[in-house]
Each structure stands twice: as C-alpha cells, then as structure tokens.
Image (cartoon, rainbow, N blue to C red; front, top):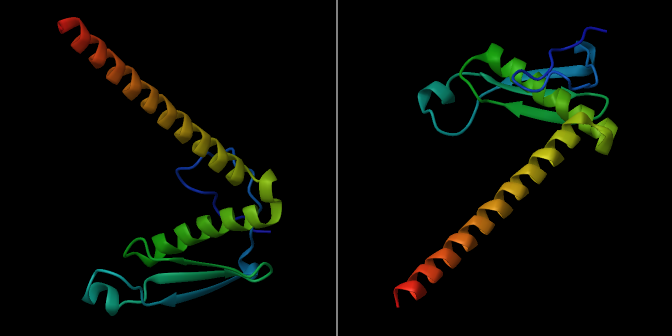
Length: 128
C-alpha cells in the first residue's frame, strides 16, 4: 500500500487510516465562487472520491491544481478515518478537545466580564 501524506500543519501524531491511489477516483472540474475569468476558465478544482466508502471531497482552496490535490487527499484521509473509526478516531478526539477548550475560554471571558461589572458597581457606590 502506498500511503498518502498525513495532514500538513496538523498534529503528526494522528494515527490515520492509510489510503491507496487504487481506492481513489479523481476529477478536475471548474471551480465556483469569486475569481472571475481565472476561476471560470480553468479546471483547477479537485473532486476526490473514496470508492469503498463513497465519501466525496471537493477542494478549490488555491489556484494550483497540485496544491488542491494534496489538500483534497488530506481532507479525505481525515474524513475516511472518522467514517471508519467513529469516536475512536484521533480527528474526532482533537475536534472534541478544541470544542471543550473553546467553551472553557468562553466561560472564563463571561466570568471576567461579570467581575468587571461588579467592580464598576462597587466603585460607583463608593463615590456616592
């Protein structure tokens, strides 16, 4: 099996399922969205399908076909891993951890805001 690259810029400790090129079906289509003629006349959008699971990924993040191919494979690899492993997937665990971190940050910000309001009220009472 020829392993595809793991997600770039992500935690390399991810234990993602390996994909082979034989399992993938790749197409190049015209992208959509802003960009005018540069977008409308070039086929630099990559549509990648994982045949065994039926998962399809469409990537048009850059103007480069090669970069879009790489990014599409990374995204597909994470989605396939999540599809087969479910809650045991490293991708799922990382997502849950980041959500928890975000909620904790929100909670602390709310507490600080309440504390500031309380201090302001106390200062106004002291002035009277």
